Image (tube, rainbow, N blue to C red):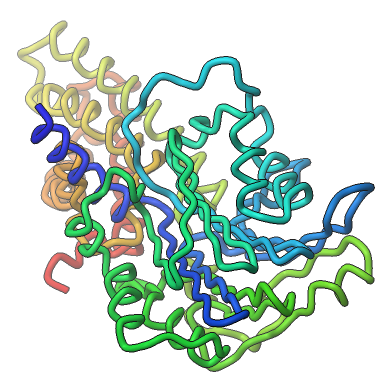
Length: 426
């Protein structure tokens, strides 16, 4: 049974590695100096850094993040407070267990994460603070907190662990349940560990090189590490590197920025125009284009309804000319309905090479071949469509629905070309 659980954990870990917002981080302590590095690997296009001043009995802090969370502002991905306490959030996987009893509920995760930096100055205080809450709320995340003494706290959904090794590297897995051989299958983690075996230093140049070897740049459109931040916990500074370009950096001094009051800065405005980032920003998917998103949802509804419609038409008059086309449109409608769900759902098929393979869902993997099925059918369908318009073998509603069906197919084929779903040999 334990072996089966390990196999399942390995499979799902690879799913998290491939399909989610990936990140990596490290901390280095040498003498009285501690640096904390964070690589935020994401498809967001709105990275920001912001500064929040202290209220009574609190600490001011800086945060970075790219996901807008409504009235809460941007959700923090990493940050540091005036006392030299820093943190990073990384996506991961952990099997669900029973939630903590008699603990506070986390109702506003963005505020909760900010409040920790505003309230705590050491990892021991963070452990005490988090221990009051049911932190299994973050079932898909792992956190690392580091203070300027060099101690670090790993926050997993069901476990809090403090360490004090001189170096520590983390990526998208829960350390307490992930064997080292599995962790080493993540390039960014393995590269970081290997880099530190050659010696350690706490110079900015050394940390920049480490962040560089741990960054991600995927082949399809050059996406990957959106923002790298290197936090000097003892001197209260942060160096930002935008879109895996480690030749340029912008540094902020936390105490100086807090004197200016609460303020937020769009990271892209701090750097020269980055062609790779512009390519990502202009790359449209159902996740970041309202028009395409609405089209996918509307198409899903249309395919489902017309699938039922053409099945009824076929059953009513099987001897009708081209009735076999109506019969074919029934399963095609269901297939396309499911594919529209996949394209609008959590799987990020748009950023990975075709055919996309989902290690946890064979059906999602099989949908990668639907674009080729459409290419195969579109010409015969259009030929039948042309003949039906000239004939009276189908009812007028059936003709128009079939015509509209083919029009949607052609639009989708255009989108599939744009998303390079046909580039299976590249």
